[in-house]
Image 1 (cartoon, rainbow, N blue to C red):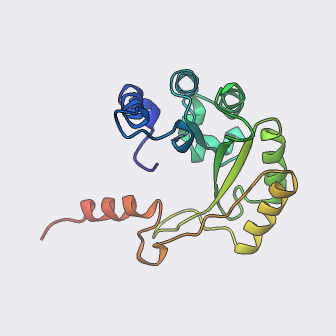
Image 2: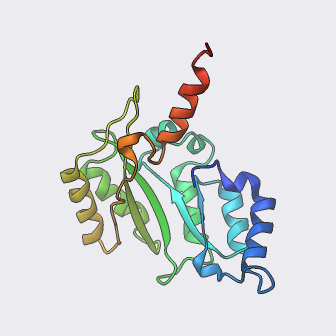
Length: 194
């Protein structure tokens, strides 16, 4: 996660996964491997057919117009297509649920109506939802949802029967949390050398 879209490097990812799962390699069970994607639909299908590993999908919005902004890949593979691929995913079951990653942005995608729509969208998918507090950086247009709002959102999802843990941010105070390192490296790259 956080290193680009793995499905755009499918051949190498698949080769690495086969080595990791092989008894002559690392011997790790496919049940212990999760691939995270923003939703490259044709390659999600291929991954399911060929590898059968667990899947995490960076969803982050319940409307296409908003997901287009937050996850630009949505313009090519909109929410409906991504969720259809999740429904087809052969490894998905109650024991091996698809994980939906959902970053919580204050006043953008964190309303109770958003939570109810998320429940409606994933109702027939064996799933869990990881709620991720946004890690702000200087100049960001977004702010993290309040803890109270995160809890209300999680409660709606849990009451619908889906696990919805709220991730604990680490390293936020030193701009080293998820999403902040890239920003810091771009700032240093753009700073003229003296």
